Length: 176
Ligand code: IMP
Ligand code: MG
Image 1 (tube, rainbow, N blue to C red):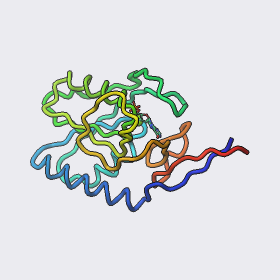
Image 2 (cartoon, protein in one colour):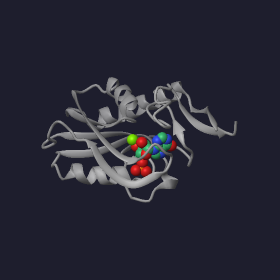
Image 3 (cartoon, rainbow, N blue to C red):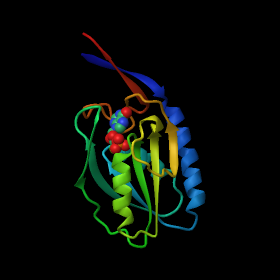
Image 4 (tube, rainbow, N blue to C red):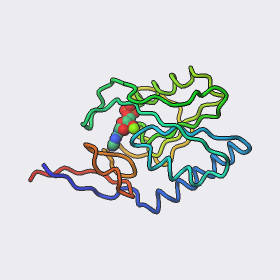
């Protein structure tokens, strides 16, 4: 089996939409410091692009949770691979994720973070696949809703590859 990637959302479209979302966030958080939590590894590209467009004071922390193996299917098991370095108490926390699929990872993560007493807690995602949801998650900012297809690029991987693509693509598998 080999695979190829077809462009779903171009680099320009992604960039334009991130600017729109950043404008909303800048309005909503006017006068506040934003504590961004990047969900590794997929959220890295989106976090950096978004952060560059935020106008207020921003601090960062990183977390890694896993509900997927090296496969395209959810295992349903959520595990903290790397926890945050800093406490959340009193902070206006914005979690930045690459994609909400089944919702398992983020519903677990948001509940856990809520327990750490942030001043506020919101969720921002680059992509949302609402058709695949099995766990309810409140998502405050969504760049793009996409159909139920496996996507790569802009941080998203297939078997740890393609994260560096500057666009979002759909992966197609072909018999050799
Ligand atoms: P959930 O727990 O099912 O919502 O899964 C969320 C995680 O699964 C994301 O953070 C991604 O790492 C991964 N994932 C879900 N769909 C895709 C996809 O289409 N491409 C790449 N990774 C995906
Ligand atoms: Mg992820």
